[in-house]
Length: 316
Image 1 (cartoon, rainbow, N blue to C red):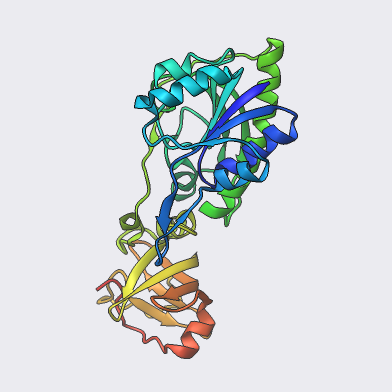
Image 2 (cartoon, one colour):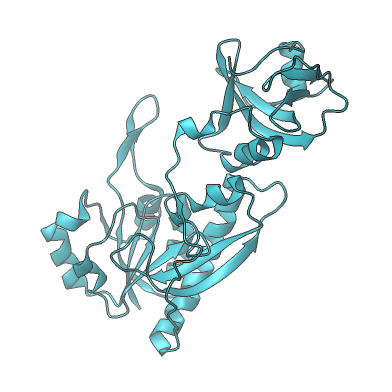
């Protein structure tokens, strides 16, 4: 097929690579405009743009695809058989959705209709789901509301993080799109309307989401830590500095010094290689962390440099 691919972040790269590897003619790649990043504010190409240029594929970066007449005429001239979209970052207007022979097909990182929206991967971990996956979908004017085409189910590991699930689903998406396109071309692709029952949206992540509320149960906090690893990360404050947590486990508070006066967020036990924090239910054992201005490290190394005291309340 003659394909136009639309995508922006790392997650979309395996899908683009799969299209190329699968023998499809990727006539153009469309991605978000380059943006300044980092302390030096250097303008960096999107990961999809970098990959496209490696393969000599023309790249277009419309800032507002809905209102870009010149870009629409370029698409008309290309006349793609299909437009494949993976984490592009802009809503496509109806005239683009109707342009390709086989339509616009989206690779979405959830088992639709659950987790429509921008952050399905992280919310699956945060909410303690046992399964996630990838769904290919025929796009319409709604936000991830189009007919479902095919899906791949992935079982979450006990210590699954947002980052590890991101990698697994991005690879699965690249594999699934080839099957979907093959069936579209030979006329065997089935469309299933999304039910509204079970539908929910996975809202965009921001740093404020990572601020730990110690009144939550230890299990919920542990999932938050995994779900927001590596970004935006779960954190609290310690002696006026931000303290990020990268790995923790839920433990009973039996061995900790939990007095009747102990409050949630209080360090109630300091061990050789970790420390325990009282939560709304249960205790959280911290295995890996990062103090503001320092490198990520295991808790044992941290304690050798920062002798944490029992009774310290975090987040104050």
